[in-house]
Length: 420
Image (cartoon, rainbow, N blue to C red):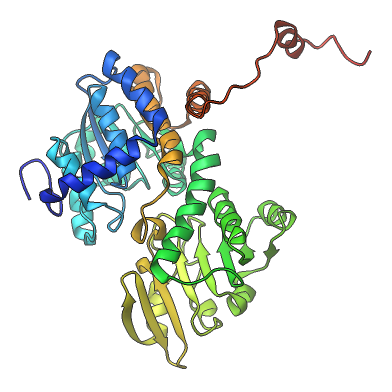
């Protein structure tokens, strides 16, 4: 552990640079923003405190912010999601990184505290742990903060709760709510990376298996879509009647967890809520059922319930814990109930993260320019940023779209013309 950073092993930096190079070659939108940031320096001298998954894609974002003139301090937003090679590569480049895979809870929050000690003017969060720590334990730093961004659904839920209660002290842009984030990152990113993590962890076949997906938001939709594409029988568990109806119309079976527990082979949670799978469900599950979580926090599968039902536990594969129940049945928990796509795999593909992180970079720039007029509440990403990211993504794919004629623009703004 050297001065200015705390990583697993700084000697891993050469491997990390290769991973970052690979991500950069597949994130053209963010690289285009980096080119402009390098010229214009819109973040000159601004201190940014970031609590994000420390992956090769995040490294591309951090280097883009630094190119814009910012000073960045970075910690992990999950104890098991850090790619140690990437953390080492960023540290070697002089970035203050406090992250390594396998942090204890104490180390995790200690790293957040170290980032906050850099006295950020802008925060970047993924799950809102940095923001809530700032509001509860480091309140003396709040007057220095201009604003922040939030990456994921769970964090936005927490921040909107703070806003309702009047405890949120500075403006936050909900990057998660940008169309170019949730329509692609949440659906295609989570769908692919979640199943990637499950397959890497278990080495099992999904075709012909019953895969229970808890939650049919954009993440759940992506997981269900990819599981079906691999030949699984997909069952959706949902509490919202509109989303449940949508799942039915999309061709999935829909039932409560109490029934799904009896037939599922794989269970994947993606709800952002607590104790979605609990004792009453575990007691009904088949011998050999596999439990995985794709939500941000490790609370969706009740680990205390699983442990209380078990007589023994052993780690049978690197990310697979086998729990033997009193009646002899075995249930398998993947990745300690944490984000399986980042614990057992590499997270979302760079092609979708380039859009999410382009929103992050441009939202940080927006805060830097508009901090004085923003109120302490949760904002959507400005529409012009969302559209710019979409256009840059299309350009990077070599795709042109149609343009409205002047006649069409006039027609869309008028009310006089109707049926002729």
